[in-house]
Structure formats: C-alpha cells, structure tokens
Image (cartoon, rainbow, N blue to C red):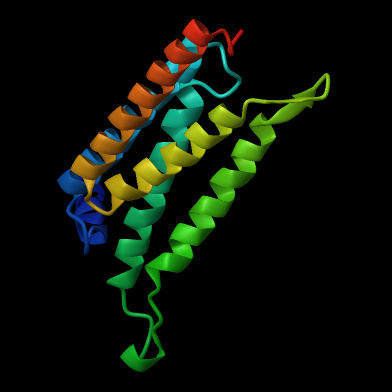
Length: 161
C-alpha cells in the first residue's frame, strides 16, 4: 500500500519535483505569515491565517499550472499554455477577497491597506510558485518595512489613530 502511495506521489510531479514544490509552498506560507503578522498585530480583520492561506493558494495555483503545462492533452498545436491567464485569475480572486475586507463605517473607508496587503500576499505566493523565492522574500520584507515605517510616521505626524 505504501509503495503504491509513494509511486503515485512520484509519478505526479512531472514538472516540479516534490521537494522543490514543498519548499515553494512553505516559502509562500512563511512569507504570507510575515505580512499577516503585521496586520494581526494591528488587529485587522484579515490577519495571519488569511495572508498565509492567500499566499500559499496563489503558490499552489502556479505549481498546478506548471504541472498541467507538462501534461499531454492532445496535439501540441492544439495545446494552449498561457501562464498570464492563471495570474489574472489568481489576482482577480484575491482582489475579491480583499474587497470583502474593505468596508465603510461612518462615511469612512476602512481596511484598504489590509486589502492591499492581501493582494500583495497573492503576488508573493505567485512569485514563490514560479521559483522566484528571493524576489518574493524581498517584496515581503519591503512591504513590512513600509507598513511599519509609514504607520510609525503617521502616528508621529498625528494623522493616524
């Protein structure tokens, strides 16, 4: 039974080896956590778990697309592989989730930054899934510096609650 299970795992990873796929998924999860932790510390509606899941889901979509691109679906002339379509779909899905986090209260729009950070978590997941983990890490840490630094500056200037 275990041999069959392991054979199934080994046979399905035609484009990205299992260890590489796992590393990309874990990197997406960890980098999504970096963004989510900052939002969590400020008690925002989309925090640690949400950002982790958004980032990892985006990564998984890219990994699946890479696997699908390597599969045979008929004549090569009939096959259409367009990674940009998948990126657009992930971006639209994350934007839908982010829009749900944004709401108005007392005539003021709230949580736009949280929505933007969710969108960024999706982009980081896409980068991890495509093997661009150093780029994803740079983006995550720059975003956290911007969120924390601008937040601190807004407090000093008295423009933030």
